[in-house]
Image (cartoon, rainbow, N blue to C red; front, side):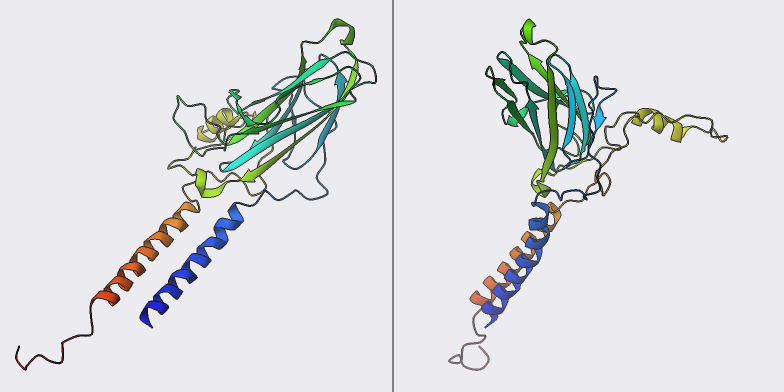
Length: 271
């Protein structure tokens, strides 16, 4: 009876802890329908068009242009960037490529996905994809691991023939993330997310200018819907607590099995 009760308590604790972990591993929720999808793209890092995750942005341009977008990515997310380029009816072979840069403008490698693809002559479109590594809350200065903040996407054609230069093209860009949760947690966090203008605004906050004449130079206004989650908490703490509880219950169960039924009946008094 005691063993059954002990196992029941262990299973109940495990089930309660599995709820938050399962929720953390689910894909990010899509934004509301009233979110505006941009219809233009920037031509440099400074003019990159801001897009929210889950929104499909569109843009028109010419073959040979550099098209830039930016999006927010928080700790524990694994972003996947997808792009579709629609080409004119007549064109030569074209190789299109997407590159993703973090808030420090370091080029981030793709874990998997067709980052560069070649559209054969006459192909109506070409599709590209790049899945980044999981964004970490903190990393060593020498490491190039992705960190929370603004990410930039550059779409361009490489090895373009002169005859196709300037041909009209249109592009669709979207970003979706999978929430990895505590499996990617690290013991540390950034004081601020890596977004454009954060150094200037931090300096303004520390200044003693009381007349409010200091100008804000924030170049990025996008962030996750629930704000930046750069802190010490993750669901890894839940699993650590559950592991401690199971170890304690296992110790209690082992003691209950091995302690016996007390004093043997066949022993004479006083022994």
